[in-house]
Amino acid sequence: MAITTASRGKPLPSDDNATLVRVKRGSQPSFSTLSPFQRWAWRTFRARVLRRPPSPSLDESLARAHLRMRGDEYLAQVYGMTLIIGLVLAVLGGVLFTILFLSGQTILGLALGVLVPVAITPLLFLLLQGQPASTAKSRGRKIDAKISSAMSFVSAMASADVNIDQIFRELARQKIYGQVAEEAAWITRDTELLGVDILTALKDGATRTPSKRWQEFLQGVVTTATSGGQLKPYFLLKAEQFEQEHKLEMLRRVETMGLFAETFVTVVVAFPLFLVIIIAIFAIIGSGGSFMILVLYLIVGIMIPVSQVGFIIPMQSLASEV
Image (cartoon, rainbow, N blue to C red; front, side):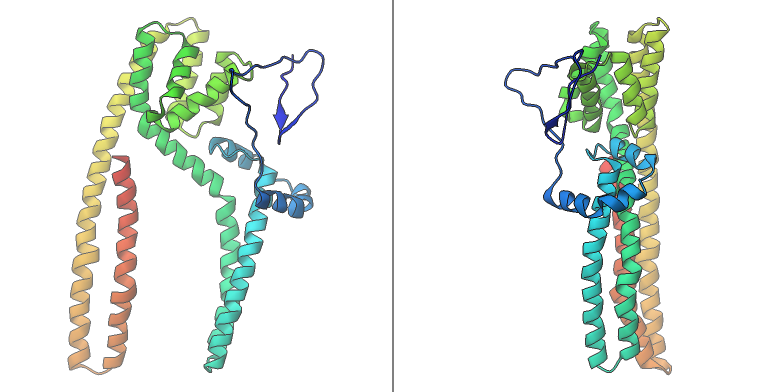
């Protein structure tokens, strides 16, 4: 039995045994279409991508990140973005070389003019290529942050003897649970739109999720159901387990934030202050006063702002997860 589907807005041919999937009245099927830039990148770099297809891990990362693109399409997009940004960096390097050459600093201008595009462009390509994996990890953290409260909802539904497919359907409608609701929505899509049975949909959901905790939960549901066990006690047990783990995780993050705060006061506040005072004294009573003044400018203009940003970013990340 096959299921009639569509790709890029065009229906695929189906056999005589194809199953017609009906959507709700007033609903329209949506298709994952490429943007104009993505279509240009695919036309331009298609031959190159097909000669060296991306690794299967890229397709897995795209699925876990819920980026509705194939691996070859995404790799073509990466080539296109790298080409455009590389050209911009080359122009910027040429401008820097011209400015420094006219000011008499030929060696420095040549070094910067070559270093800017040559050093940044490969790094940019690697960052863009690893973006799906980074997005998938971010989704995994968001799932872990909401899974405790979501399990309370699931256990409450199970206590009312609601069917498992209905539980995930209702969980998908609760947008307050964020990415957990998104994962449940994909399971509901498999069962209602693609005609997959609920256990197979749960197995597929466990395979493509970026969260280990959600994966273990779905695998436990499948194992309990196939072995003839009761799902209600399993849901209640997992809700209690995730609640305890959530409390421990929150305690760990609060302790980490306290450690960051103490380190911030020592490294970013006290140490630069003493350093500025010592260098200022050396500049006054010793030789090399102009060099010491330059060091002070570097400390105040570069070291202190960079160190502050280096602490603010992880602190903000931890605070958003508490």
